[in-house]
Amino acid sequence: MNKNTLNIGLILLFVLAFIGFNSLYVVTEGTKGIVTRFGKVVRASDGKLEIVDPGLHFKAPFIDQVKALDVKIQTISSSADRFVTSEKKDVIIDSYVKWQILDAATYYLTTAGGNKMQAEELLRRRINNSLRSQIGRLTIHQIVSGQNSGKNTSTPEDDNVFDSTDSEVVAVASQSKRDEVMQNALKDIGASAKALGIKIVDVRIKQINLPPEVSNSIYQRMRAERDAVAKLHRSQGRKEAEAIKAHADREVVVKIAEAERQARTLRGEGDAEATRIYAQAYKQNPQLFEFLRSMDAYKKSMTSGKDVLVLKPDSEFFKFFNNANGAKATN
Image 1 (cartoon, rainbow, N blue to C red):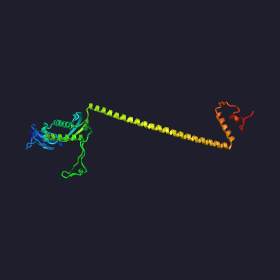
Image 2: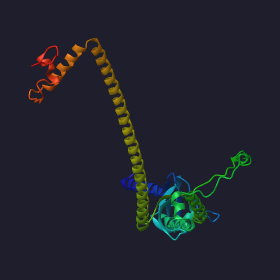
Image 3: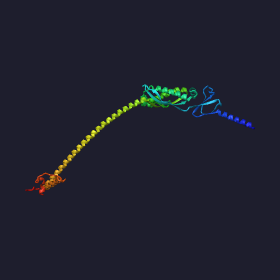
């Protein structure tokens, strides 16, 4: 084998490897593949688009191209939009949609070759229209507070009803207006999205706000209501405080009066007892008793040393000064 033959063999091997590499392609898990040839979709023998499942596949090299479509659940987060309620008032609602490619062939044909941005734009329009129709039939109070739309009318007998055909328990449950809006929107969009080859998994309202001008007026009204309630509570508190204070003052007066009454009673009893003792002492030795009382009077009247008494020398007060027996001095 000469050198030229070896080079030609290597070139042929390289070309075959290159052609073989371009003849193989892989569709990853969670995607579907659509093969196009010269820009046109390859169809099966029955005329339908040929959808390629995940795995390793062959294609015509150089002329076939593979378009991968993501069939996993995806999310469309719509920007907050303004809606009008039945009261002709505006609310700002932020929502999102969970969707998934159901029919890859239909999706590819209706979205200009599987253009995800176009598909999401179509879904945004439809969810917006559905929500606008739903919100237009409700009031702000029903939307924000989640007022129940129905009452549970089932009876105890109805609660025990069991449908054996589909093995499901029949129950009547109440639901909020907000849940009702989301469920109705899911039904509306789900029906129209099938025409795009799309399955709507879920529709949710993330947030409901009021426009700034409406919010400010509501906050001011709420503030005024709270201020009125606060004033009412404060006035009731002052009223109760005055009642408690008056009751306490009355209790103080009553207790002081009772204490003074008891003190007078005790003082009277003490004075009576002292008088009784004095009387008994006087009966036992009148002269000694009179002498002790006079000494006590002298002591109390001359305690400071600066007392001045204007009395006659023969006054009864000084009788014990002149005579230890208390007899008055005679001239």
